[in-house]
Image 1 (tube, rainbow, N blue to C red):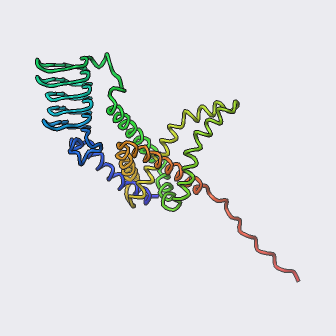
Image 2: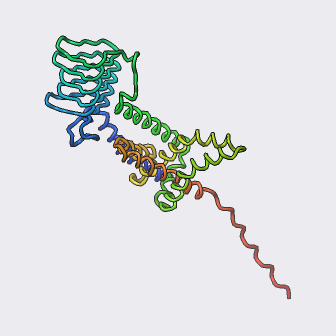
Image 3: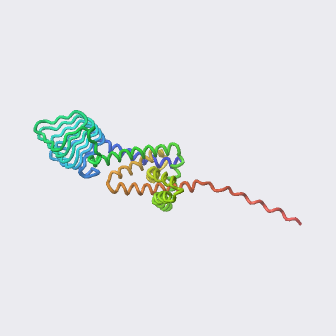
Length: 307
């Protein structure tokens, strides 16, 4: 069991390294390193669009934003001072922090702020100037809303995985053994469960006497698929990390790889589906193998022959 725990630990170190890379200001880098070629994304640090530089969307969660170049999409600042002297073709959202639009700056869309706003003479704002409290439209945020969902789902799956490994440590070696020795069976069982669960829920709803069960199953699909996704992250970490690494670090490694891939459109959805299928499969295989076999009763010796 400790060997299985070890596998998940090294993977966790890898994923932590990825998380540090994402959390650093370096996430807003040149087009060769960006997850989306012309998007600037910063979780914590400084967002800078230099004069002469053109990007699609500029997004920062915490830290100052300086726009001297051109943003063809929207500028979204969740927490930090915003200074715009360049051109923004879309909207500007500043949820928390001072916003300054310098003379000569151009904003084609709306300017939505929460705190202090300064628009210098000579600046052009073609849209409306509004407060966050009067308009918060997730559809207008677009890319930012997808990132916010990514962050929320990442945190949720991380917490769920840690709790599962904390309260059910036997899952770690069982999942690792299933992923290593019964890969084909795990994929087959996982695919069947992944696609049959919603079908079964609908059938239960159709059968009048089973409507409550069908509704409960439909409502629980999101949690079930998330559990499968977390188990898939555990399996991935176990395949990458060898004992005697901690099971928690191993899980973080697999989780980190999947969450980084999740940032990529289309590919992230494919990775989520494959991880959920694999997770369902290894859980089923691990559960079947954990059922103890009935004890064998030793054969009674034949009585000695009587002359």
